[in-house]
Amino acid sequence: MEINLKNMATEKRNVKTMELDCMSSFEIVSIMNSEDQSVPIAIHPHLKSIAQIADWVAKAIMAGGHLYYIGAGTSGRLGVLDSVECPPTFGVNSNTVVGLIAGGDGAFVKAKEGAEDSKILGRNDLIEVNLTNKDVVIGIAASGRTPYVIGALEYANEVGCKTATISCNKDSEIGKVAKLAVDVVVGPEVLTGSTRLKAGTAQKMILNMISTTAMVQCGKVYQNLMVDVQQTNQKLCVRARQIVQEATGVDKQMADQVLSQAQGSCKSAIIMILTGCSYEKALQLLEDANGQVRTAIEKEMKL
Image (cartoon, rainbow, N blue to C red; front, top):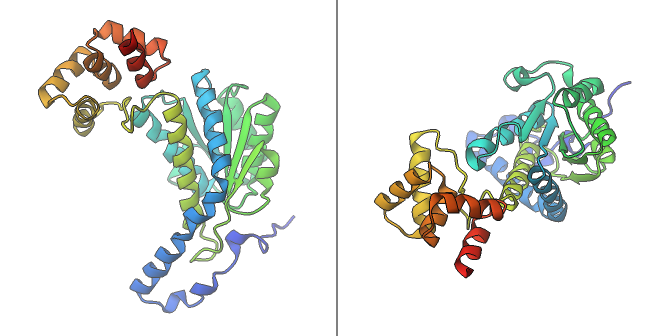
C-alpha cells in the first residue's frame, strides 16, 4: 500500500521558502531563525502532558525500572542522544535510560534502509532488552506513522508499560497506540520534508524536558546543581568542585578536601559541609531521604 504523505504537516511546502534556492545565505539563515521561533510556542499547549510523562519516568526509575526511547532516523538518533547524556549528567547506569533506533546502534551514523518499516523489528528490540511492566516506553516519530515505533508500542502495551509518543503531526498513528500522545504541530519545514529541522528541534526540546524533569524528581539535582555529575574528565572534576562551592559557600581547598573524604560524591560532600556530619552519616541520610539532598539536610538540621 502506498504511503499517503499529502495531509501531513511535516510534508507540506512552506509558502515562505518557495524561492529558497534563490536566497542568499543570510536570507536562508534568517528565515530558518524566524521559523524556529515557532517551535516553543507549538510545544506550550502540551506542557501538562509532557510533565505527566516525566512523572511516569521518575516513578519508574525510582522503582528500578527503565526509560526506553524508540524511533527511526533523526527521531531515533535524538532518543539515543538524550539517553547517552544521562549517565554523565545524572550519574545513572547506562541501562536506566536507553535509546533504541531502527537498524541497531550502527544506524546512528549510517541509515539502515527499510528497518523503520518493520513492526516486528520494533517489537523484537524491546523483547531483546527484557522489557517489563515497570518500564516506560516513549515512541518518537516526526511523521507519527513509523511502523517500527508502532510495533514497539503495541508490544509495550501488551507487557503493561506506560507508553507515550512524540510526533509532529496531529492525530498521529503512533499516538493512537500510546497511553499518552504529544503531537506538536510545528508546520511545514523550511526545506520540504526535512524533519531534522523544526520537527527535530521540537523533539529535542521535549526530550530535554522529560529526562531533566524526571531526574530532578529522582533526586539527581540539588537547587539547580547536577549533584550526581560523574567526574570522568578534568572539566567535570572542576565542575564537581564548583558545585560543592556553590551549594555550600566554602573555598576551593575545603571543597577539594571534603570531596576527597566523600569519595568524589558531590551529594555527600554538600551534606557533610552543611550539617557537619561524617561521610558515613551522609550516606545514611541520603539513603533515608531516597537520594534527595535537600530532604537529607533538612532532616538532619531539625534533629
